[in-house]
Length: 203
Ligand SMILES: C[S@@+](CC[C@H](N)C(=O)[O-])C[C@H]1O[C@@H](n2cnc3c(N)ncnc32)[C@H](O)[C@@H]1O
Image 1 (cartoon, rainbow, N blue to C red):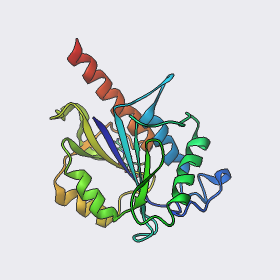
Image 2 (cartoon, rainbow, N blue to C red; image 1 turned 90 degrees about the horizontal axis):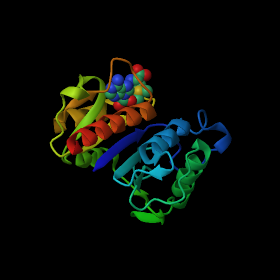
Image 3 (cartoon, protein in one colour; image 1 turned 135 degrees about the vertical axis):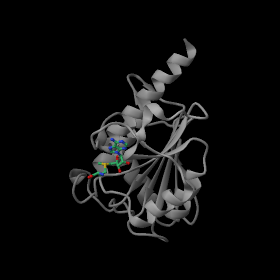
Image 4 (spheres, rainbow, N blue to C red; image 1 turned 30 degrees about the vertical axis):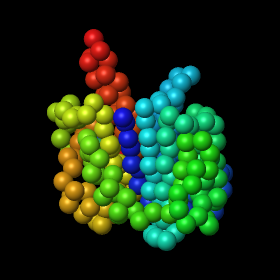
């Protein structure tokens, strides 16, 4: 299984933003939408073996929200950024009164979250890693399960509190290359690394 956790620091959690300003007033929802797109879409297919959690942490609980997407059940996901942003915005708007997780569309579950608790729980999954520019090269990381549970941040770096959780959980920091990349590029590179590992295992 391929699992990602993305921490979205600036997206208004109420969904109160316009699709015409995704990179500005929407708190870099453009990049969050690209992460969703690169996590799940292939050429004419979807990655059914992939799951993505997005922690929307601004503002913190009780307003903070988590959206979970499961490739196995996903429908209505088009490759363009705007329609993906609309799907996420709709989930956030519908979740305003929610006091627990609910599926708002096939494969999309949304609800309130304690972000640091959810981050700690994710770190306890098998093959958990922290995608970090200063980590060890991904080629040196032998995945114990044939998959991964990878934490990454949006264009804003992780906060001190988030870094403290990641450090305390002791998961390996893994680098995907010598340059700082966009979050969505990291998703592409890690998928490609594991596509090649899977292909080598089958050969
Ligand atoms: C745009 S970067 C974050 C901001 C960046 N640290 C900066 O200096 O502005 C988004 C996230 O992608 C991941 N990332 C970026 N480049 C990476 C790399 N070379 N290896 C592993 N993860 C990377 C990290 O999780 C990072 O927090």
